[in-house]
Length: 424
Image (cartoon, rainbow, N blue to C red):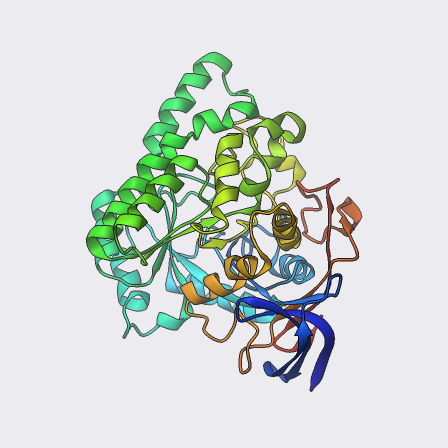
């Protein structure tokens, strides 16, 4: 047994002072001795990051399971759900089993795997993984659909096939929501002006708010019609946020949830001038107004924070809006970034725990984690408010070796992370 003493504990929607005792992989006891104390270390449930790209198999020059799960540990993330756009893509039972084997051998944190949907594999996916009695149901955490093209070449924008999927499963369906037709139209316009050297500052003009909104609107309407469990990944615009939030005030839409990334909460299109292609991602980082709307929505409307951790080599990030790879590493500093936003007044600590632990665990059926409670998994992170973290290249653990947060000083540090009761 291990006892973690004299800490502020975020439990049951409040922060109290006391100790937590673990017994093997579970929490055995919580002893409350008083009200929260200013400046004391704070014990939180480990973060559940439902949106990561650990690049293995097939893309291990950029990152691999061991390196990225090590970065997750350092950032207080104890469960990751990995996306399917690797090589080969996780779109067949054989590729899924291969990936499970790799994760069982190499991953330092708890994990789950998304299954990628294409126009050709929907029926098999539903049969094997999509129903309550499906034989391989527990092998995946949900279905991922790329409604706009992104890294990995898994575009699936056949609306009738999409309707078929929505109508025939209650598994969570995560969507990358951008209209390929709108993106292609904008791309052609800027190519006519700049050729292949379109400045990165125009990335949010190519992948603009309407490109996101058009596809989000379509997917939300399908979810309303079918009752599908829709999870809108990496929401980026005030337009989408207002649309879904207003619908939720009119209808009971517990089947529709919205995720936001630390990058879209932290950066705006003004930052392309200083960060260039390092903050190029899909969907694009957009206006300050969009960023600020997402920040305000942390208090109530957004459901979860997921990093979309997507490492690339610095050599992959060369070029402008068309040629530089989209995506950035962020998992090591996601909790620290969220704590900084908490200090700025956008959310309370219990709300941060909801967004980064409790809600994603609940959404994906991980009922044994996501909160500090007796009997729950002892996935924990200890945060020190007295020690800041200055991000320099030498502390970055992601295999790609860089971070868009380089040069940032966060107000907190991660002192310790426990996975299944094991200190790391």
